[in-house]
Image (cartoon, rainbow over all chains, first blue to last red; front, side, top):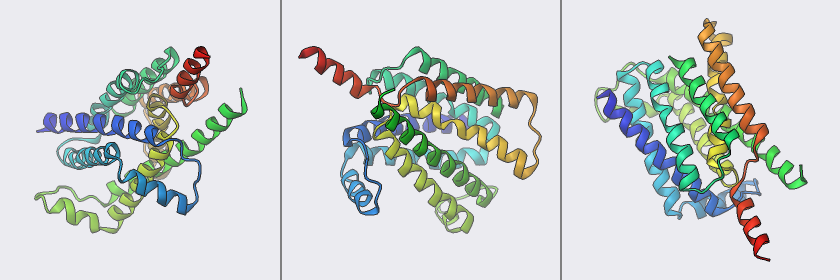
Length: 120
Length: 141
């Protein structure tokens, strides 16, 4: 049960966050932070299928995480789900075509090791 | 550093600060309000009406919105490590608010996370994709 939930969380988070990044980049930089402009941006984004799908995936991940917290310790849940960092950085390079420099790989690796140490 | 990249960098740091604080405080209230177990599927819904859980959910909606705004200009491979400073805040909040002990192993983890965040946030630009396009367009001219 524990591992099934982790599998669901990792898959849903990765798909959700990559789609979210793709959808938001497609929308373009948000420059106007006044409430009216944010409302207009929100209504545009609500019709963007990548954003809608990403929020659905993140909701699946959220409820699976609530479920995981009832059967597993937080100190197990946090490092186990940190696997998404690796998957998402790889997908950022190949799917989102970001230039992931050596410095970014080094930074991401340090963060993953750090998360494991803090939560184990 | 050009004015444009300095502007994006400051905007990214400010937005990342909102992302991190809303996430940490949202999770804090969520955990405070959660009961020990959720026996039926309906309990997953009714738990959302507890005040602490509801406040946590509102803060997590702010987290989602600010993260989406940040991703509208910043790379995912930049946002992921930079916003992980939240793990450090959780550990420090545990020490200050709940007087939890931070073991040497945890301090080592905090140091690793902070150095990863510093490398990415100070050493790389928030956005690389449009620069690639600009360069490609420049090369074509």
